[in-house]
Amino acid sequence: MPGIVQYQLPNIDLLLDRQSRPNYKVNPSHPELETEFISFLDKIDHAISPFQRKEIEGAQLPLCAAAYAPDADMPQLRVYLDYFVLLLLVEVMSDVSNAQAGQFDLDYMVNLLNACSDNEPFDTSKQKDTLVHLAAKFARKCFPPLSPLYRYDATQGTILYLQAAARENHDRKNPSTFTVDSYLAHRRKVVAIHPVIAFNRWMSQVKLSPEILQTPAFEGLLESTIDLIALPNDLISYKKEKAQGEDIHNLVSVAMVDPATPVKSGDIQAALDFAGIKISEAYLRFQQCKLDAIAQTAPGDFETRSEIMRYVDILLETIDGNIVWQIDPRTVRYHVFETPEERAQWLVSICI
Image (cartoon, rainbow, N blue to C red; front, side):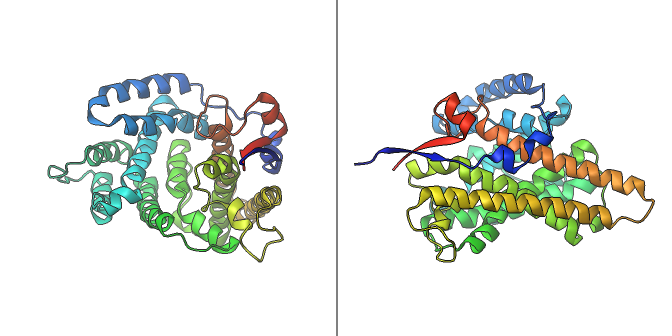
């Protein structure tokens, strides 16, 4: 008979040193953004199914935007929210059931996103899926406001994410055996952080050249940021995914089947602890890459050094914002903690 077992989650606040950033806050425009978003959903209610509305509303995208961009102004937040809506739409369209039914054309969506980003015409008149028309509308709203310095990264990052997400949806139907290393490499591809950070750079007007961003130190910063968003999410979502039988693509589950880890099969607590160690390692890599990025600036180049520190700050805001989006009392995404006491002690009750 299944029963409820309480486990100790690693304290993510401590692992991410969040106490050193006490001034972090959710953007104060969140309530206004939420109101506008619900009004928008009411206007398109006739065009989407009740299930689709539940999926879109349940993602709590206004909170995500406000948490990821705590200092953005309201016009920027609206563009940012439009982007998150676009991400959710393409994710829904690319799910395995739509792909198998022939209702999702990856090449078509890639062409659509490129055309909308360049503000060029693109014919969607023959498309019967309402979500395609909505995706085109939101792509035209969110990409063109960005200047070329940011728009290319945002658009191409979205396309790479869409391609990876489509492959993952196929893999979920035909799962392969992951090792921890292969899982981490895969996980980094199916988190849309590259384009999200491009939007964050735009909102903060961080001016770092593509050449600088492609150096090993900056690529390491971005990769460790992805890990510091994806791996805490694996910990937080494990309870819900296990209850739904969808936990195969989760580091906690992978740690229990990879013979190279010290985790025994079925030892959930040891797997949770192992995931915590991986988060700690990623944070150490982040800090080292920050030092390496600063060290590569020329002596006396205070302007570039200042831009690097601003870039690091928006990465940390995104990392902190992701935790808020997952476990803030306003969110209903995962219901990870049953009581305030569980939240205070990072305890989670899982049905086994």
